[in-house]
Image 1 (tube, one colour):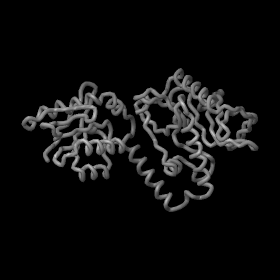
Image 2 (cartoon, rainbow, N blue to C red):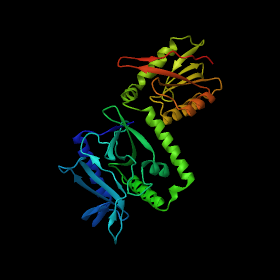
Image 3 (spheres, rainbow, N blue to C red):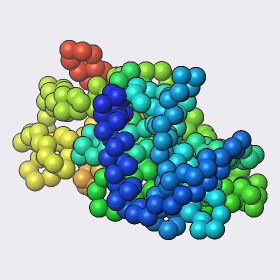
Image 4 (tube, rainbow, N blue to C red):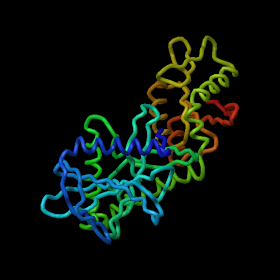
Length: 339
């Protein structure tokens, strides 16, 4: 899980770090005109590695409805002016959904990344977010906000570290190639239209699951261990097979061991997001390898499971147990664990 940087201080420091990294790896300065729909910026000092360029500036005038730090990226040209491939602008503080860029912190490692909504402009029919994301197969990750809402974003680059800009140049190339594909009418084919519809259906499913505030899942993430303990207490309150004992380790959230054989295995996931269910299926099938092992996925009670995932769980004989959480405790809702 990622957390959105929202404080003015943290955003400013992340922006300064980003600019230092870009100057370190894009070592050459060039004076160029940068064109954009409706105008251009003459004599802009861009940094470049010879094939890509970066330029940053403030956009915070009194009449500006969405004050932001401009971070522009594109393909470099020696003999002509420059065109913007993507704007990854950042609000100075807080959350502004009208601004496509933001910084997100990986909660596991503390690494801060420059992130982008995936929204691609350009004033040409066919250039848009869902078309680009389905065409390029970019991965969207979830970023939690202080309001409890979730924002999706593509990881563009870490703001510091060795070869930090490598992923950003790949992202610029992907956007440039997509815009060329639009010009070449590659996205007008029935095959691509079908791919885009599949992406939009998947995205709608995800959005529907997360409609409104999902502060509950952010709670779940921080209280994963509590859910595991609730599963253990609930399962041990029922009768256990003779000589069986509970077990949990780095590989499984919880299980029941009889002798040396794992006869039940439980995997706790904090949401029914497709990637979470995929992960749980893999873990349960790997560690619950015995044919007679009971495999159980534990999920929050207030999130629906997609129909095809339900069908897969049924085919694989993976049972579903759900939990309910409030500010005080976690409760396992009474399931039927009969074979």
